[in-house]
Image: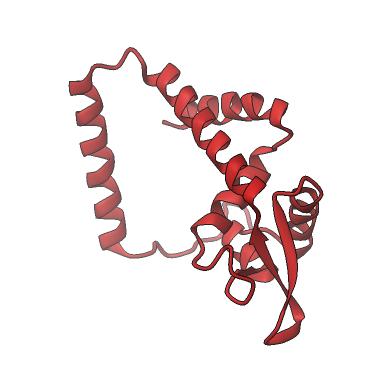
Length: 151
């Protein structure tokens, strides 16, 4: 699975290059688009929330949003409830970019899994869904220190 994911991600990244979109930017756009109110100034996601959702430092999120804003895919707006905060709005061009990203992802997945029979695809999906359900039912695993780390 790891190999398949890496190959699909790499191929998707290469296919997005002509559009000037990096995988990190694509991920940020998808995260913004799934947030409620992504096109409403008072309800759009805050930059700090985006950083948290992406599991990156706020400074790194700022860099990603800078590039997206420069490309016209998002727009920054001050948060009316907190003048220190910034909200990130998805633009019409950002929506169009999301459609391209989705098309590219679908094409790459179709190419990768194209020779898999519908029956095998159903089995794979059933196994992955069952594994995900078991994982979620078990709750979050305890965090452990990496081997060799000081305690």
